[in-house]
Amino acid sequence: MIKQIIAFFALVFLLTGCLNTKKFRDEMQLFQKGLDSIGTYQYKETTIKPGDNLIVKVYTQATNNQEQATVLNMGGLGKSEGTYQVNLQGQIDLPKIGLQKVEGLNTKQVKALLISKWSPYVKDIGVNVQLEEITVNMIGEFKSPGVKKFKKEQVTLMDAFSEANGLTDDGLRNDVLVIREENGERKVYKVDFRDAKLYNSPIYQLQQNDLIVAGINDFKFQQRASQSFTQKFGPLLTILGLFNFVIGITLIIITLSK
Image: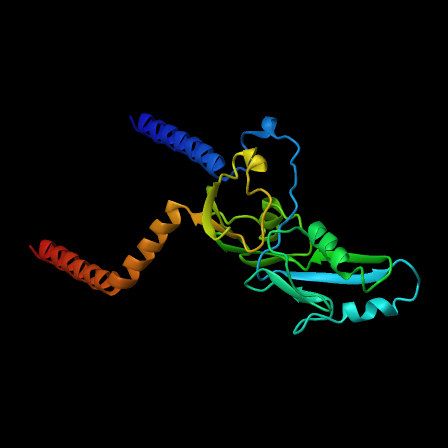
């Protein structure tokens, strides 16, 4: 009979272990499906938004002497020379030509605009334009949350995921949110890192000031609730435990004295 009981509990333990392993794998493993549907991603030109910093450098291709371009490289009030912050109206204030609307344009379009505006001042003008950085905010169950800055224009969700060192064990792989401001409207996208189809998602390529939020699994909430309960009622539970201990000892003494 004892052997049968032991065998029963051993079987229960084994089955429970298998179920827990499968549940853990299903929750934690990345890219469990969708790998066969990944195509070549078509990157888009990053468009400029208010608050962005643009690095603008002007030069002439007519001569090695760059003196005629010097005055156009001295702008950027409050920033380093040649660095311009896009104001709330989507404009940058440039030498000689003043305020120019750049919101909604990409760096190639801004380059063409500035060449056309500045060409009367510099012979055979050349202009380089680039975004200073892309900034992404990451909060929640990432191992290294915080503000992430990238010195390139094409930043992907996987770039940010790697920069944050991935999710914690308590992070939900199937419940990561990307919150984005587009044309004055806030949009929320849900991402499932267990499905490789995220590579084809409209938010795979990140934009300036995207907010990425990693959710927390139920176990952590239960753990926090248990800790809170223990903190609130711990002293009372200790007193009840001591009371039960005293009652038990008293009953044993009474029983032995009969």
